[in-house]
Image 1 (cartoon, one colour):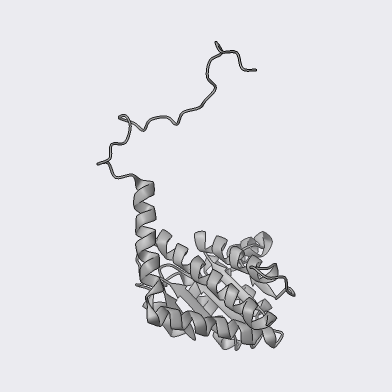
Image 2 (cartoon, rainbow, N blue to C red):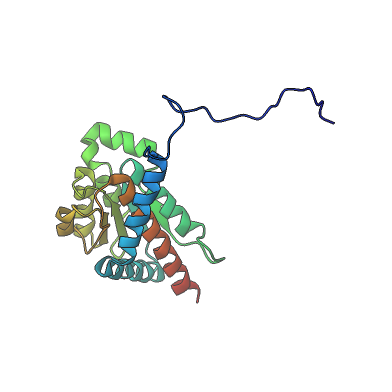
Length: 215
């Protein structure tokens, strides 16, 4: 039984500098969530983007049915997204089903550091595509700007090897399109929100893939 005279152990969040937030103060968390909601709603109504997402999903299904694999690349936060997407494909998204081959080329620290040291960082994904990619595979390249040199040279290497090339970028990433069979452009400019849309679309694609391959 609690001693009535004992001090309360409840921990209260510290007030922000300058005191508590007033209703008129812009809360950065609330503001980000509201921007994200607006961006996701815009993406959900973007017909060309949704059509591209379906084509990407169909390309991945075709590759996996033929015994090919999905390779995924990206830098920074997009590297994390690459690992996340690969995990959904190899493990599962929603359904119990066979494992499908997907590989994020962002995880092998020995390969990444050796290639960067010997050839320069721009070639960290290109060399892995050359070594691991095969005709009929799909390369999914994530770049919020659409201008990352390491992404662009890897896409060119993939095309030369007969891979299907897919780019995920933002509203200003058109330059990436010349190296992509399919270019999905999130209809926003803010890097963090672009990444959120990329992952939301990727989850939808994982659902599409599972339904197509399990049914």
